[in-house]
Image (cartoon, rainbow, N blue to C red; front, side, top):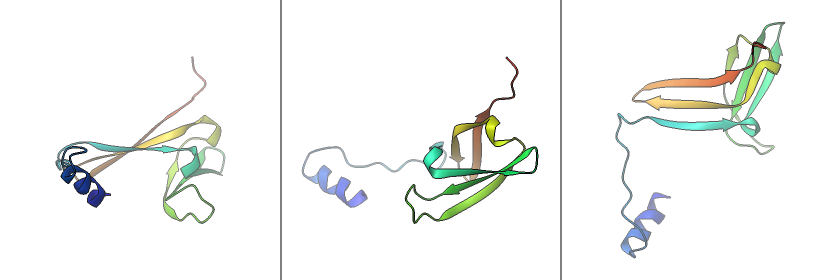
Length: 96
């Protein structure tokens, strides 16, 4: 992709690509197609994140959450600031 962007900048179609600084926050939104929720007991869930949405997908990592699958949202966000990663999402605890 970087090569195509450089070539497009040489042809005058767009600006030369910039590399983001290490201190800037980067994030990715993980939607329902890229993860699977498995219940573990009565109050825990195993969240498994995959590399793509096809049938030949590979597991990237799993994390254990302290909520039942019905309480968890349909998307999660993984953010990075420097070398620190943050995993976030929402849940429904039934309280209005």
